[in-house]
Image (tube, rainbow, N blue to C red; front, side, top):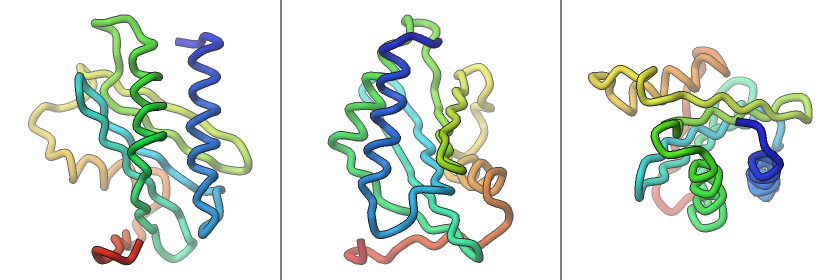
Length: 131
C-alpha cells in the first residue's frame, strides 16, 4: 500500500490531528471506518487515568481519510484504519472488510479497539456543547 501519495496523506492526517492544541498529540488514536460515501472518524486521547473522546473535524480530516481510502484499488480498499501517535511517531493499521465480523456491533468493536491500545480505562465522552 505504500506510495508517495499514501505517505503524504498519512502525514497530513497526523498534522490535522496535531491541530488539537488543548490536549497532547502523543497517545492519540484515530479510529476511522470508511466505505463508499461514508467516513466515520473517532479520536481518542490517553490521559493516563482515562481516555478522552475528541470530536473530529469532519471537513479536512474526512477529506484526507477519503483521499487515502480512494488511493487503494477498488475491491482492495480497507474498511477501517487505526492510526496511533506514540513517542512522536505514527503507526497505521488497515483492516479489510473480510477481517471484520459482520455480526459485530460497531460501537462494541470500536470500544474493544480503543481498549487494545490504551487498556481498560474509562472512556469519557463530552456532553453536547462541551467541545
